[in-house]
Image 1: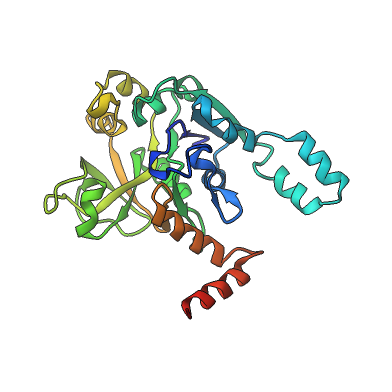
Image 2 (image 1 turned 120 degrees about the horizontal axis):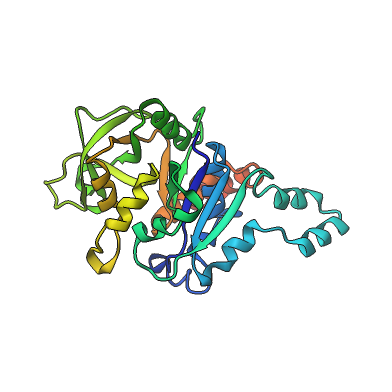
Length: 294
């Protein structure tokens, strides 16, 4: 069973400026919770028990969010605000650990993942990019759990992908696959990966969306990976090298995804999650209807 997840949170969040100037982009809220809490909840729902935050000195707010706040909890208890107190205490289950490691300099996603090696060891693990929300609403199991099942059934590393319109493929990392496009919730072997292909040259319309399940072997490959554009160590390059001695598959997600590192993706996520929020959903839907009439 896959038990460990790596969340690279050391980035400066330049796509979210000016909102991310003074607070981590991962702490920007969707309705009433920060983005990163949704990502951690996704991991926990898939059976993950250790969350490794690859962080930076400016990101203490993330670690504090998942830590116990004794004074605040004592104040809420004294004032009889037990519902809020329960929400705070249940941000993460008692059997889930949050572990932080530092990325000393911004050398790319591959380097960020490599920083987690002392905690992960040789085990297979998942990587979740924290500015991407993967919504499992309506699914019996979320996509991460189903991707883990695909790994355990086949032994192939898994890259989560989403089918995108052909005229949008140039914006993404695109995978080439063996055979037909898999149906949602299924995997197909990857034969190649292209980062932001020129329009008309894309090998498929399956775009990588920020969820990976990788063997411990990836660390050795990352150590051997030479810096690419911008002097960064690319995770994609190491995954491409991994295909030389281990099968790598594309898992086609069944849920929805929101890129919260982009303003419109962030706004779409707010609308989607707010419409069904147990406390604010009804009022939010009324607000939407009111503004549609204007």
